[in-house]
Length: 148
Image 1 (cartoon, rainbow, N blue to C red):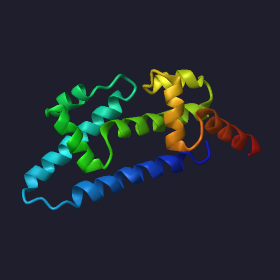
Image 2: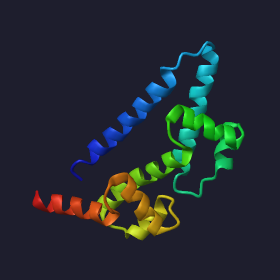
Image 3: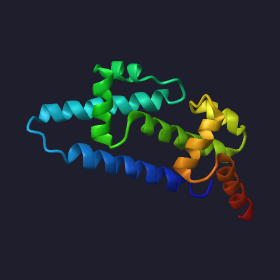
């Protein structure tokens, strides 16, 4: 598991940086509106993180924060500089990392555990985010732990 903590720290710092540059740095004439936006963003992210392993729909996300689906998309993109589903896919990949390192489950099982219904799509998204395949990622950690 060497380096796993650094990956988590890096991801958390990216999230905080995104929140800071896109939410807190905006000057809002109405502080209550800014608080409402932060609370809505918090609820959206919390919902995604609690339901990432399920089939998540835009309608369910929008209903959770009590706005229409199109406004939900615009709102999230405006504050996070990425779409809701880009965030969700990246979060799912993040959640797959410790499972891959652990090495107890097949890549197909891990894909299903983190919310991908198609293991080939999991591999494609994983490669886009991590710049390697899930099996290569797993092998790199196995070889590092065997050297130690």
